[in-house]
Amino acid sequence: FKKPIDYITKPLSELEQIVRPTGFFRQKAKNIRQAVQTILDVHRGKVPEEMEELVKLPGVGRKTANVVLGNAFNKPGLPVDTHVKRIANRLGLTKESDPVKIELELNALLEPKQWCQFSHVLIFHGRRVCIARKPKCEICPLTDICLYYNTVFKN
Image 1 (cartoon, rainbow, N blue to C red):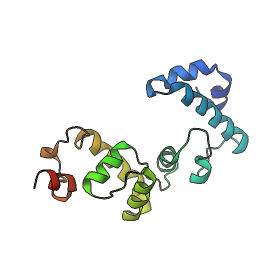
Image 2: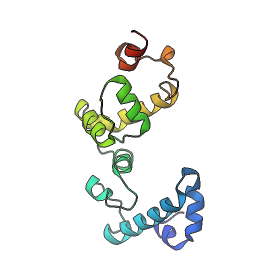
Image 3: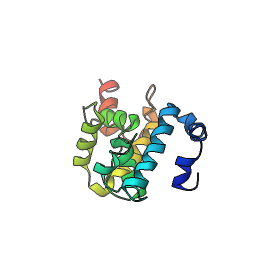
Image 4: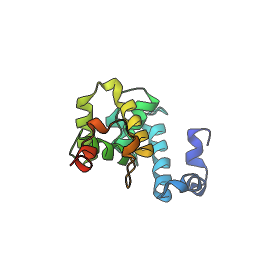
């Protein structure tokens, strides 16, 4: 779709097919349509640039809002996905399991301008090296500071 109005005027089934590979495609398509409608009606066609307004959009939680803030607006935002959660816990940066608490703890460790990039680095590391089921500790450059490695392999 090229214009916001396309998300509202095209058949919902077209949008569903586009987002189908992401899972929960029917609900996501409805949320996208409703979010676009809200952006048009409430925000005069501009995506909000504040966390408080972004999370009011249908289907937008803190993780998505942080992605938008950091990547679209170059504003501080640290999205916590499963990779960020896993890596932050394995490194010993947090003991929390709640994504919001993890976000706040990581935010306190970094300058706001570093938040978005830090999240990207943890996600990349989690996909390539610190894999959930079988981390590749033998090639990891972080073993000397990694709580997981030093607990599992050094004891």
